[in-house]
Image (cartoon, rainbow, N blue to C red; front, side, top):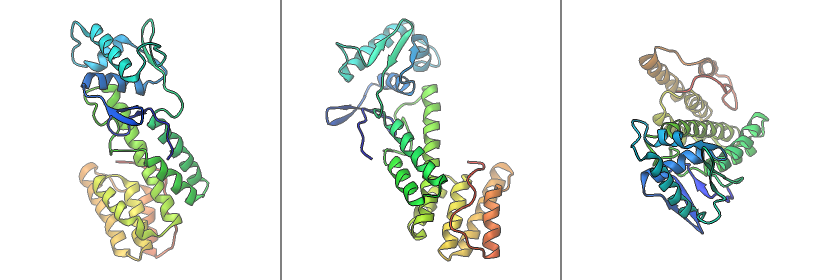
Length: 264
């Protein structure tokens, strides 16, 4: 995916300087930039920044420290003189991020194109766009090197969920547009990593069945039922049970039919 990104958060936080990507070593500077990035374009009040950077108890010098971190970030961003990027406002600070400058925005736009193509039955296009969206990720977790900051943890969890949803969409489109054997290993690895995620299991069942591995497909469903009952006292959702019934009856289908349900 072509990019003009200036900031990266789909993995560790990084800023582009010339042709190179640099990380931010001091944890508080990194945390401050993360908070400003997830609120890009909005004014974040200084007292809110203090609460985010020191969620347990702010030091007496918290306001001066925030000002110091902002100065350091401006230097890192080359914004010391003009202050057109990281602006001081009466109540706090505002980071201006242009279109396409944040990798998460690029991922979101590309994934949306893929999901629209998938909904329209354009499976090859959907697979290509969703794969391109996923290529923006550099690690399995967004904002991976920022911890202990409440709003950042919430934002990271939301981005991680959207990554998994895009992955499921890509796999579903791939099942419909290409050989099933190519996606089985990745689906198996994802099921191990996310044992309660029903859409992953459903897609793996479909792939295994279409590859002529009916017993393995049914075993995947049984394993899910056992895990769900042990963890939550639940049975698989309707979409998974429908796929199970189709496999038991020997029916043919191209892709998993269920697109909604619980996620674990």
